[in-house]
Amino acid sequence: MNYQGTLETPVGPRVRIDGKEYDYFCGTSYYCLHGDRRIIEAACKAAEQYGLGPATSWDVPPLQEVEARAAAFFGTTHAHYFVTAYLGTFYLVTALQDEFDIIFVDTKSHYSVFDGIKGVGKPIVLFAHLDPDDLAQQLQKHLKAGQVPLVITDGVFPMTGAMAPLRDYQSILQKYDKYFLCVDDSHGVGVLGANGRGSCELHGVMGDSVYFCGTTSKAFGSFGGIIPGDTVLMGKIFRNVRVTLGASPPPVPAAAAAAMGIKILSEEPELRAMLARNVAYLRKKLQAIGLPIQNSPVPIIILYSLPSVDLAAVQRFLEEQGIMVRYIPPRGYSDAPDSDAIKITIFAQHTVEQLDRLVEVLSRAL
Ligand SMILES: Cc1ncc(COP(=O)(O)O)c(C=O)c1O
Image 1 (tube, rainbow, N blue to C red):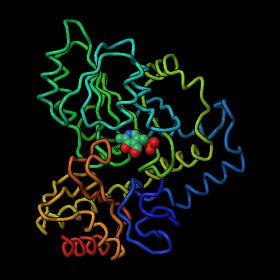
Image 2 (cartoon, rainbow, N blue to C red; image 1 turned 90 degrees about the horizontal axis):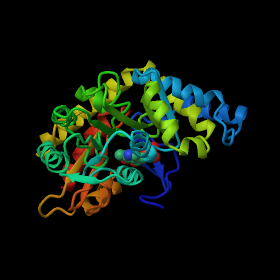
Image 3 (tube, rainbow, N blue to C red; image 1 turned 135 degrees about the horizontal axis):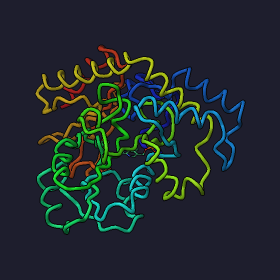
């Protein structure tokens, strides 16, 4: 696969692609930790000491450390670390499979959510994207007396950066005796909420009946999925999700890197403050040139198609000027809109000069 040329440096605010330097506004490494020396060194040291991994065994310190650090970060007693957050919702719904009757899913949820919920063989009902009223209607229409719903959605949608209205969903669900609210928060963890715990923290929906999975492959600068929780949830995961028994754990250097990424974000809250500052700044600057950009703490900005503007040409113009953003074709990803768009990712390490130049070049291109 080759989307936009070959990257020749670690991801950062400035990268080299096919021999040319760019200001880089793509990807999901919101703190550029994938290229951080401490993370690279942690991975190398673990590789030297333990090799790639212990095959199917889990008794290696970096694998234990990443789970302990994740639990501390998310304020839970435990966490489970696994090979990709793509499996995160599969883990959650499979762990809970004996306790609910019908799955209600946002129509634009990530591919991983749809693939994950298929495995449990329960009825699946779609509700309109980001729409609590439609969720309420679908619940009313499909649930019989005594049946338990499980609602599942992305916390932050990867292309548009839209945030699921989790508080509204929970208010609706609280009318039922028992419910589950499950969130794929791959883009929220490490970024949103007072402690960086993600969308559930931001929207105040932590607690019983609410479960989420995240990734260490984006904000935390490494690789691998994570599910924080208590012993009860961990018990259900190990009882019901056979991947935990039948597959090798993630590579040990990745675990060591993930542990280091969580450590860095725990100990350096200023990184989250830098990102929040950049997000607010760029959103305001884009609003000032007349673009319909919403206020939001999410470091993903989408430029929807505009009348008589060729967004593919805009992306090419920016690239010629040494600025890399991502062009999204119509329906080009799980939550991508029906018409084309441009996605801009903001990093904590972008300088004000880079943000200003992006806006200036973009305003010339539009
Ligand atoms: C919403 C969402 N869930 C899950 C994943 C998979 O996460 P990972 O990077 O851990 O494979 C992605 C990847 O981009 C994603 O955007």
